[in-house]
Length: 499
Image 1 (cartoon, one colour):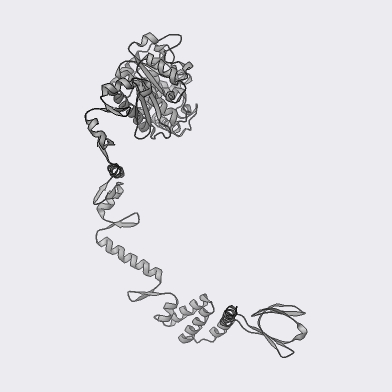
Image 2 (cartoon, helix red, strand yellow):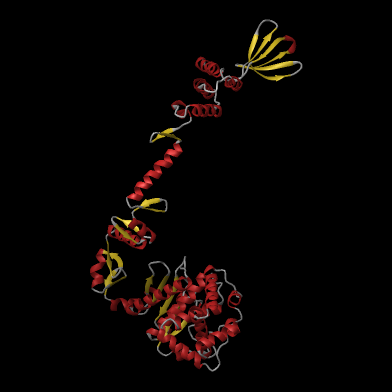
């Protein structure tokens, strides 16, 4: 406690020089020294070192108000001679001690007007020397930076995004390359190398462009596959995979889709490649990729296999996709009144298309289904049904030059062409095959025309429409807003077709 009181007294004595000091002389001979904080007609209140005291006017003999540090500084400053350097430095020191920094700086500036090289005044203002000259610290940093940059420029370096680099480094950075060791590579190559390091560290090896467990490599090189926890020939595996419970499941490394099929492995690999191609075409045309749950596409072996699958998994997790089943004679399951036998809503499955037992037909359906599901997913199912089908028909019938020319010839030969207005009101997909084919041919060609047309306004309008679809901001009227009157558009499309 005594130490605390002593410390308080010390602080008071030290600060007495800069606190305002007034003196009240009392009639009884005592005097009180402090700061007068209130005066009335009846009393005076003075702030002392240990508190405040209120004194009646009748007890006061005299009040002497002493000048504070600022007043003292002003009085002493007026008395300075024009060339009094020493007096100004002493007064600047007094100002600093009494926390009058602005006045101290003014006094140092006055000294420099008299003696430009006065060291005390420069130091008082925070100046430093640079190459024999007094400058501010900020100015020295600027001059040093300028000198450093001049040296870097002389050495052949150039500036890139605020830093100095070698000329060849700037060129590489402008191309978006990154440096690994002494080599410049693309970010994709770096990502691939990092992935390779991680895989190798896990004991993985590469086989035909994919990473596999090291112990799996000898089996894969012999053409074997792993089913039910053991390695076997593809022929043996196909017999097991023919059952839907254990069908082939081929998933995309990027998580975009999953292909499930009970077809033989060789065909499954082909369908997987085509499905990957279809998804990548969609990404290219829309300029974006899908996120979230993968697109599920299924291919079952035949009508009987489909019925077995639908009865067992209808509405369940393993039927939450779309696909097709293959038969040799599709006419045997076409009923003019009910449509393809695969469209069986009673079983609770999504929907299935009938495909002839030929790889090309199945591949066409794969592209169709991928495009349809991609558009549905990307647009949050807001894209009109006619457009989903048209975009899908484009990928099915117009993606390969030979098939495109055949589709265009068929379109020209249609007895009653489908109008765009009819197409947009109801895209026909029912059991009347000629009518359905006419809709697919027209819808697919419409997309082809708009993507590749010589009519710049149509192409630009369609690109804006695709952007709305990709953002999930499309509605039924968006197409007409951007492309105008369907009849006028149809006329331009027919002229382009030569029809």
